[in-house]
Length: 143
Image (cartoon, rainbow, N blue to C red; front, top):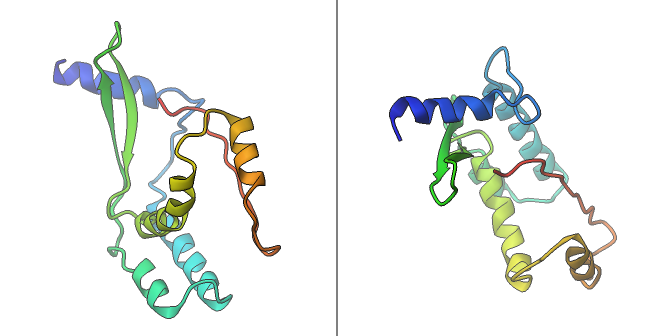
C-alpha cells in the first residue's frame, strides 16, 4: 500500500461524521483539566490514597495529543483500515491504566463473554457493595 493510499484510508475514516466530528482545536488541555479534577475528587472522597493520586497525576505538561493511525486489515478482499488512537503520554493514560488494573481480576474470571445476555448473567452473580455504581457504555464502531 502506498503512502498516499494509507493517508486516503485514514481520511475516509475521519470523514465519517457518524464516528468522528471535526474540532476547532484539540481538546487535550480540557481533558487534562477534567482528569486532574477527577483525581482530586477521588482523593477527597477517599476512593484513592495520596500515593495513587500522585501517580495518576504524573502526566506530561502539556500532555501529548493522542495520535490517530490505521491498521490495515490485509486479510479482507478490499483493504480496509481499523482506526487506532494512541493515548500514550496523553491526559488519560494513567487513569486508563488504573482502571485496567482494577478490572483485570474481573476480566480474568470472565474469559469470554459472547453477547449482552452472557454479560448480564455474569454480572448478576457478582456481589457488590450498595455504594458501587455500575456504568455501561455503547460502542458504535470498533473497526
